[in-house]
Image 1 (cartoon, rainbow, N blue to C red):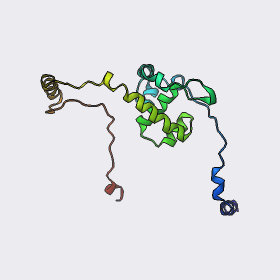
Image 2 (spheres, rainbow, N blue to C red):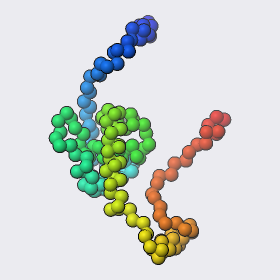
Image 3 (cartoon, rainbow, N blue to C red):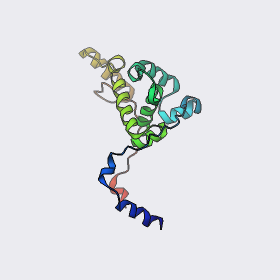
Image 4 (spheres, rainbow, N blue to C red):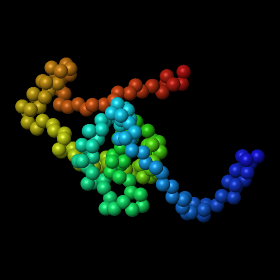
Length: 169
C-alpha cells in the first residue's frame, strides 16, 4: 500500500515545487588524520600523511576562506576530498558522502583543489629544455627500462579494465 501512496503523491507533484529549497543538512566531518594509521591513510588517499601536509602547506592559501561562517570546509578537508576522488575515481556523490559534504560542494572542491595543484606545476615538474639535457634523459630512461626516446613518466596506479565484449559473455 505504501508504494501506491507514493505513486499517488508523485501524481500531485507540481513543477512549481522545484524552486523550494531543500533543508540544509550539516554533516559531521571525520578527522582522517586521527582515524587512520599511516597505512590505512595511504590506502584511501594514495599519499602518506606527511606528503598530504606538505601539499596542504603549498596550496592552503588558495583553499582557505576569509572566515569560517556557514560551516566552511577547512582546507585540509578540501584536500582530502579531492585526494579521495583522485585515488578512487568514484562518483562525486560517493566522495561527498565520504567527506561529509554535499555533491555540489564536492564538485566545487575537486575543481578548486585541482586548480591549486596545477598552479604548482612549474615548481615541481621539470622537463629538459636543451638537446643535451633531452639526450641525457632519453639515455637514462633507456638504461633503466630499455624504453627508447622517453623524456618523462608519471607514477600511476594501473587498473585492469575489463573489455566490454567480455562482460557480455
